[in-house]
Length: 339
Image (cartoon, rainbow, N blue to C red; front, top):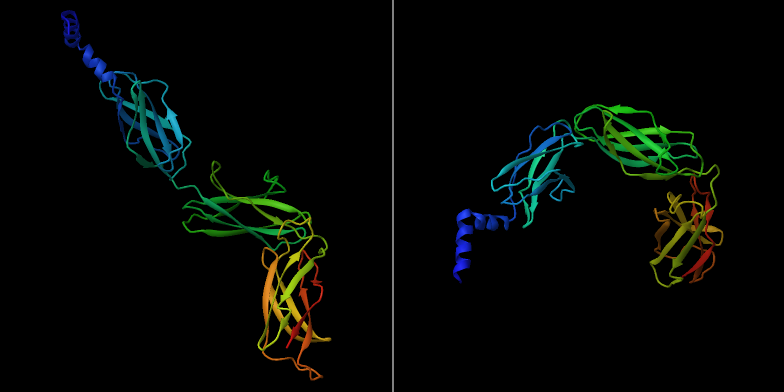
């Protein structure tokens, strides 16, 4: 190393500039501090930052979990080589709720994260609202149900209702008392249109600003007159040769294409076996929500008959009982052979 370069380095070291260059090459040192000034809707987030010789910009990350999701950035950074206290106030928080937060700072050399910390806002947590099913559905009326946990504060609730999720109607406000257990609520509504799909949800409130919305749910009102349904079914095997004679009948109920899928698919159907005009067996099967049904009929021996035949031909008919949406209906007859 030549003499001139040595002299320059010695002068830089003496003036502290080399130390400054080394410090500037380091990312900030960050410590997440304790939250203070906590209210039901706001809190001050604190921390310390050593910029390590370069201007450091900082922000707080905050959320309901360690995934955070929201950042609150400072308008101005901090400079220097010593720890500096920083503070940012966050607002529009939910009462009675645990929040996670941490401090992050960035300078020209990189970023550093403080440890995760938590605080709980003051007051009671927001109410919980779960939309339930619609019951007692008719052509112009229904009962809307749901469940509310008031979380230790008197809670106002209403149902929003409409032919879309815009919900252009709502029920009058009602209340449930303070408590910490789920409460089932039900509100009848009338003046609805027949054969119409409605959306609804339950809304619960603490005061006028802390709101909990239940999920959207739907129901389809009954038509003014039950529509025609078709019953499609198949019984197997076609021939049963030895006792016990076991037959399985499966099928589905088909309603009008103008109905939402599955509408009217409830209640029972009856699988009937006839020898001539005489019914010799009947099995009740349940219509499933997907409109399917399946049932088994067992003959332990041949039904009594006038003639001494060893083989009997039985007619099979499935009868759907009907409901407010669909009129009673029969399947087309099919045949099976016993013996």
